[in-house]
Image (cartoon, rainbow over all chains, first blue to last red; front, side):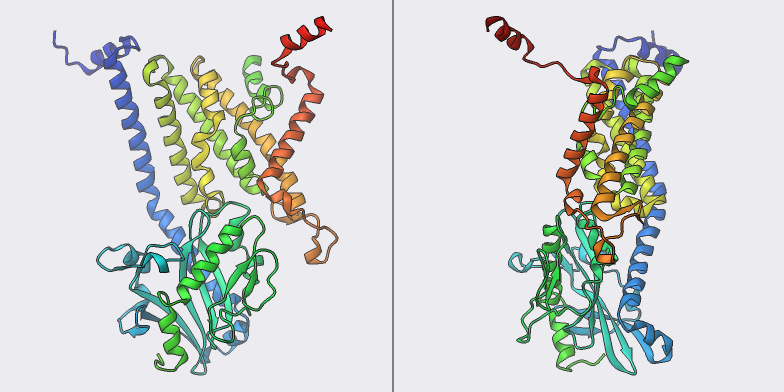
Length: 270
Length: 219
């Protein structure tokens, strides 16, 4: 008897013993379908909202970093003299690439694009990121035409997540003007404290290199004693090591090193 | 009616999921460094518990025993993902601080424990109330532990300064140890001790009772 009425069919299915293989299969399928639909629908419906938050967080961190830099207040007062310029840097050579709109460059998209990204040699990949984009944005702040500050996007592996942030250097290119992180998923209460102002305020004034020009910037356990040492967070040693490594990577030869060298020697004056 | 009230009230002290059943300890360690994260986690867990208990109870008569656990976990995991997504969309700051712990609700033994022990055998409404009661019981302990840890670890509560720290010119030297996971173990241990001193009926009988009695008889 072929009864195609779905209600009768449904009743028949429900009346099957729970141990029957047919019912087991049907229940498994229905549960999987319902749960899958619920998860996909929420994920897709809420995605635009979540992306807006991420974008806002990034912008806010950038603003916060700009504002937290010492001397910014005075600069803002005579705003006519200050210019903030975004340039796109070819990381391998350190040259500035002319593009129409460097602000719209999406570094994460390029780092994820197999045709455009760059495989970092394993021995040099201290930040643990695997691949990086070939180009990266840098923000140059000038005061009366003189380079005052430079802001670089940085990222690297922390203890259990990728840390995304901005590093600001003074015009001398060795003094740190500020460091901020806008995205991370470290241990709450420990590693996540790298996002707190109390820790970020330790950074301004520290040096990235010693007098000989060797990269020495480091998050130490406990209190730092040298100009290139920054106090670590107790209980978050590995997050601190991650920060050390990502800074050394992005300031080194495979990061913004060539660009900084060019700026320093005056070879380029964007 | 009284039975319903009892379903909600009993798990708060008398059969508290953390202090009596010793379940859900891992998240209790992880999110209790500050009160605000702990409260969000409590709300998320309570909602998951109520929904999971309700849904499972709704289909309890049609869950094939061969795939019982898989079905339970699939439903709990989906609920957790949905809640995580909602938090990311509407409470972005909090979701950043809770990071992976909301996702880990699915491994929280309380959820599976209540489904197996209660929802599989009871009607929908009592199951939802049981979820609510256990959620509150979990929340009470988490809030207590988080208050102690945040107050002694940083001198603040919900971000407001209560004890001015030495660094800010006060007298209070924060106990860095309170921010590390082991301190939560000690605090939960002390809480269990306190609850069992007040309610001796909760003290478990020694597993080696017979042996001990035998010794007495011999001596």
